[in-house]
Image (cartoon, rainbow over all chains, first blue to last red; front, side, top):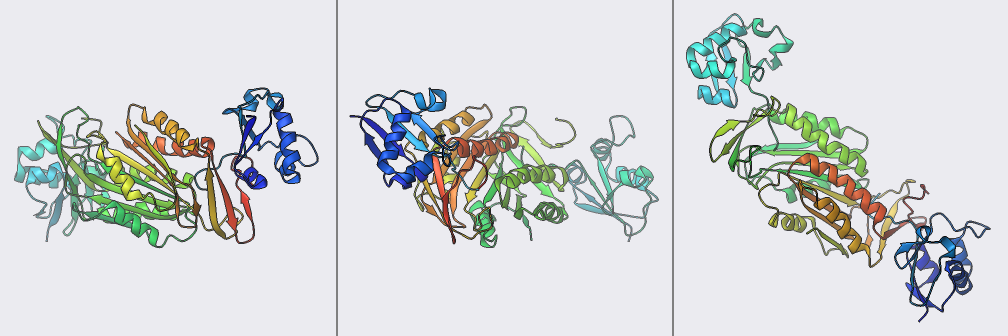
Length: 95
Length: 95
Length: 145
Length: 145
């Protein structure tokens, strides 16, 4: 069954899809590599600070509803059936 | 023409009228005496602390729109044509 | 220009005030705040309230205008409305509407309580509370009864 | 029970929300506060805004419920409603309605900004601003663009 990845806002636009299924990968770092492989430069720009592999501060990654900052960061393990969400800071309401 | 006295809230009820005309009196103290003379105990109760001639703290007296506390208190002079308003603290809005 | 008024019951409704507010506030309003003061069914002492009877002096509208204008002249506030019912008002019925339109919500959230505090402290309006057992004029700022 | 929702345009109106709010709040509500978030016609940089496009995750309603319930459980708060439009919304159009009914105005005035701050910080809703010259997703809490 692999891993379900849901995208919101700029990530959804970069990908052109609301969600994708990815074959099992070891951890979040490997998942992001796989997304970059599939979606190329557009995904790199959204994920990483310019010219580095440092995740942008504005990128939120949730694994089964929990932020990876509360788990093991990019080393957070993934297994079949996990749901990963990737999105920028929320901005409901008005200005 | 004398002095016009307007009453609000409990004072209006004590007097049973929205306003009265009083012949010229020297000052506010004399006006209040005149009101007590005309309206009796009900007016005394509303104006003064129990058993004294000390004006209750909750009594507001305006002469031509200005509070007597900013004028000369009970010694504030009155002249023909003056308008005096007597009322308790305001309480607009809800609880 | 601020928009204020004193009405008997049934002469003003909140949807009408909102409609009026939105007519000419321009394109830079991002926040509208509103407060409705409703008559409660229980007095401060827990007595059942039959109704409040409001009374106002003829200076009340002028004072409402002044308060509304003071707040409306702030750079981030576009419109202030204060509309007070002066009548016999039963529990569950509205006694006052305050509306504020501004650029951002912070300005609006700051203005609303200020407006209500000033209305309660400065406008020549009085109210008599009539409960099942007694009736008395409320002297809000003279210590609680 | 708090009352929240996410709607496309035209599916919710403020008068309807007020009517619903007043149906079962009981006799002890003395204060109703309301906030309407309106789309502004000028962006933070002064560009003319064509529209905002909102997007939400399927968890947004649950989060709104949680926020509303947290505030509604306070002893002096009777009802909280949060209703968000998630759609393409033009300047002058409403994007969010928050209503609070409580015993006294202080409780209501305190709750309103708290609710809005939590909605903006916690609810999975995003918006893209489309101006005459460009379009971008707004990262409200990541420093101003």
